[in-house]
Image (cartoon, rainbow over all chains, first blue to last red):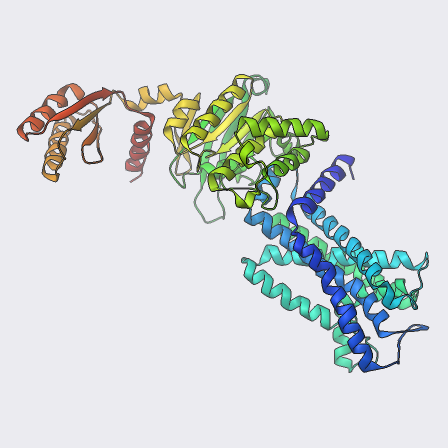
Length: 260
Length: 338
């Protein structure tokens, strides 16, 4: 990619961070998972008792399991920013304005994804630091594991960012966008391995878990955090990469076709 | 091609646009050239095709057919290169809601590639001063009035260097003083080589600013000339009589006046010379009559006034304004289309 194009994309990403994102959202982005970790984590732990959750060769506490899951879950949550940027830019006339400047729709969409990747990584790091006391006994940070976690966060941002971009280009009202995205994200969040393991589930639910892309993102990032990478993790990497590529292409097409 | 490069900033040829295969053409085979360093007025009634044309020229829309050359280069093959040299003030408001005026201008400068922070700050201060925005420097865009927001939107465009500026009804929402200030500022920039493509509904502005004017209606250009040329060509010798009365005008008088003028004109029409006449009532005391045959009609008007016992406060006979010419052209086009 030409340096000038990279420069344009980074400028737009900077603009998104400075101008297009609501600060309250950024606070919520961290506060929401932290509440889950410290409230749901300890409350469910009290209910479950001392029995741990097995992850490959390791058995971890529920709070560790949940904190690691929240890092992946957080990526999905943060990706709503991509759709919100488009909605705000359309409402405030900035979408058209940027397109009459030396920027293309492709640069605009990539800059949105970079923005949510940055938000995803920064908030994941913050959650990791805040949640460390809940999982420090189980965490196994290795040079082999970190890239898996980072990759899961990046590819997850691309998948869910592209997904919300498609929604924002197809749905005509912001109310409709909010209702549909909240409904879908509720499914993604609770029919995934973010909050509980898939082992031992009734088979229809287990199938539902594995048609949910969030499960793959959470599993990969968790495998990285606890250094439990196996063949299944690599298959999950492959599946989510292909899915993200397809959704990204659809999002780009939707944006190009979108009327200004 | 050399002619384009030397003389014309924009060259549009046989441009057509339809939104779907079965719909009618919103822009229907228009051709025009805009000279370098001039202000080109693009006027027309609502829905005439002005904004669609502007969207094509600013790369937001693709045309159905036709060619557009800007700075001598094919717009559709050199979009990015051309976009680097143009500025656009869109008809719809555009603003960064969460930022203060100062921060929004600074960010805009940055997006346009002014990397040096000091240089950007200097430019921001210059723009704030020129457009008298210093008092709202620290106000967020969300908190501004519509007029203030519009001023920021127009001012923002002067954060960067450009050779061509598209202004789509830039003075909507501005008070008269801000409006005049903007037009004068544009004039200064045009003198130093800027070309401006200007759409407006306010004919006084077009007359004040534009070197050449194209009038578009139903997707077609129906008139093209300098403001003076348009008046000469389409005013057709018409003049405006502005009568102000001391007394309040009544309906009976108005009907009598209209009937007399129409009768006079219909007699003339039979002689194969179509006459134009318009009567506008401005408040309770003033009427404006636009006619071709002022000399013949004025005595008749004065007789009716005298018979009716009305007292005239003032009377003025003027050449037609651009607004009257515009109405005449568009109305004629509508009559021809029927």
